[in-house]
Image (cartoon, rainbow, N blue to C red; front, side, top):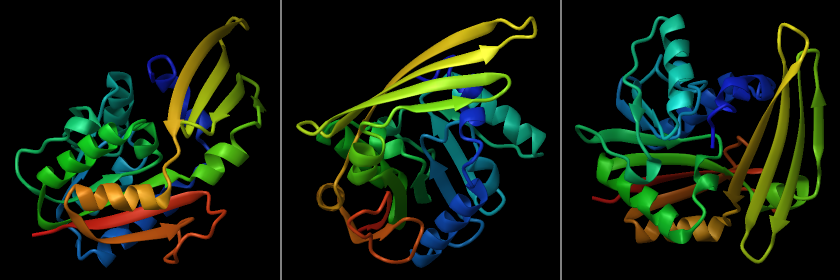
Length: 247
C-alpha cells in the first residue's frame, strides 16, 4: 500500500481543506490542555499535509509506515523551510525518545487498523509514548460514510493528465471496506501509466472506540462529529475523539 500511489496521492486529495483540519486539531488539543510549543507525535502522517501546518505550532515528530509517503513529506517540509524529524514507523509500534504531550493521528489513520488487536496495539503504544495527563486525538471516517456513502458508489475522476476509477465493496459482517483504485497518469509523450491500488478500511463505531480507549488506560474521552465541538449525529461522516492518559 502507498508505493506508486504515493506519487499521485496529493493530486487526488487536492480538494481537502488541510488548513481547516489542522485548525480543528489545534482546537481539540487546546480543549485537552495542550499548548503551543509542546511535543506532539503524529503517526500515519502520510505526505505531510498536516505536518507542515502543525509544525508551526508544536514540536512535531511525524512518522509513517510508508517510505514513499515520508519522502514526499520530507521534501514538502524542506520546501516550507521546516526541519522535521520524520520517522519510518508503524503506528502500532509508536515510540518516542522522551514522553510527548500529545499524539495526533488524522485523516483516517485509525480506519486502517482492521482488528481490535491492531487498534489496541496502537492505543497502548500511544499511551506509553505520552506523559501522564498527555492527550491523544484522532479521527475516523464513520461507519455511515464507509458503508452508505462509499460502500456501493463507484467514483470516476477525470482531468487533463490524470483520471481514476474508484470501486468499493462494504462487508457488513466484518465492518470492512475494500477499496480498489485504477489510476491513469498521462506521460509527456501522451501515453498513460496505470497504477493499481488496493486498500482496506475498518469502520469503527463510537462505542467500540470508547471501550478500546478505556481498556488502554485513557480517560476523559470525548467524541465530536464532522469538525464540530458537538457530539456526532447518527449520520456524521467523521468522528473526532480525544482522550487523556490517566495518571
